[in-house]
Image 1 (cartoon, rainbow, N blue to C red):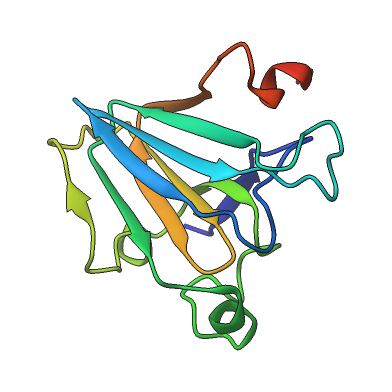
Image 2: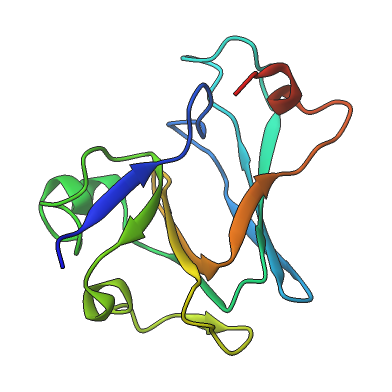
Length: 147
């Protein structure tokens, strides 16, 4: 089965220099929080954060793959993925998708779950979950973006 990469972040992205991603678990949900890119998206303010909640997540990882390794071809998706620094839903060879050995297991994975990947500057976030959504709060710039 060929790989498919569906880019999910339109009109927003993580800070390209220092996004400071962090992951928090709440039950079976995982929230990834990061600084937003104010350079390409001036609708956001300096220091403003974005949060993506992955619902019913079975496993996740926040790994060390960085942009230098990706450009040097040291990442398992270096020759396949269209762009570095983006948020994707992946589908394809399950063995390649599950290749990293630093997964944090949360729950038993149903077959129908989706595989998500976000390449930050110095880290990679991946998870297997039912779906994702932006966290909504009154002061979050993501509410200003019409998708």
